[in-house]
Image (cartoon, rainbow, N blue to C red; front, side, top):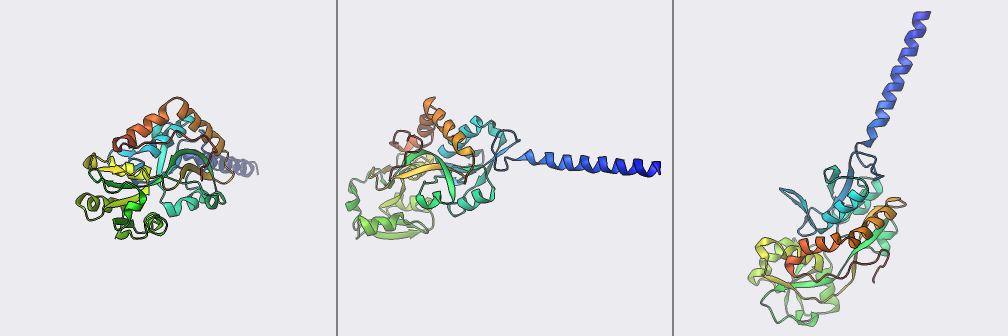
Amino acid sequence: MKLRKVTAASATVFALALTATACGGDNSTGGGSGSGGGKTITVGIKFDQPGLGQKTPQGYAGFDVDVATYVAKKLGYKADQIEWKEAKSADRETMLKRGDVDFIAATYSITPERQESVDFAGPYLLAHQDVLVRADDNKIKSPKDLNNAKLCSVTGSTSAQNVKEKLAPKAQLQPYPTYSACLPGLQNGAVDALTTDDSILAGYAAQSQFKGKFKLGGFKLTNENYGIGVKKGSDLKDKINKALEDMVADGAWQKAVDKNLGPANYKNEPAPKIGEIKS
């Protein structure tokens, strides 16, 4: 009987040890908390936007990457503790709801519709819809000059359609699969202009193979308030807002803008105040 009791007690201790080990294994990722207590934090970014969020052979680069890295550091994570995940535009809300990422910094415009399902820290950048034209093109000086111009229209984007419907009804939309595909067409004259957010255009134009070949129109057709998305109700929102304020105050924010978007002569707006959404 004594041997049986000792064996049962040992089995209980062993089971408890296994349970404790299993529970302790949960801190290998941020897991939606981003409290700095775990080993890594998971951040969503774009992988295909030069100057903003891009996966390169050397790692990850761009303004959004620099902002996210700064924020993560303020949350208690070093650069090598960040796990980057691709956050495609159509997947962002789902990724946050499922807890696939702790936060998302991916040219994520704050809109009333999105605020119904996720929370936003920021904004951390005020961008505008604009046009990109050849550096030697002096014909397109205002949106109305896009009438009869060949305007690159990217599949899935409404930017070019908005220009045609509201500003230049005679614009000739030329379909291309991606913004990257538009650039050679713009360079060789197959199209006259490309339109989307000015920050995105600046990122493409800042690539080494295109430096000095394009310029922004400076039209400011819309306001795009970029925010950092977090899961609805997450306590990360306030922490990230404080980190963004620190980034602006110590000059790191402007340095990140100049480094990533400056080569395209991007004239950025001053850093927006937290919670100030311009319609």
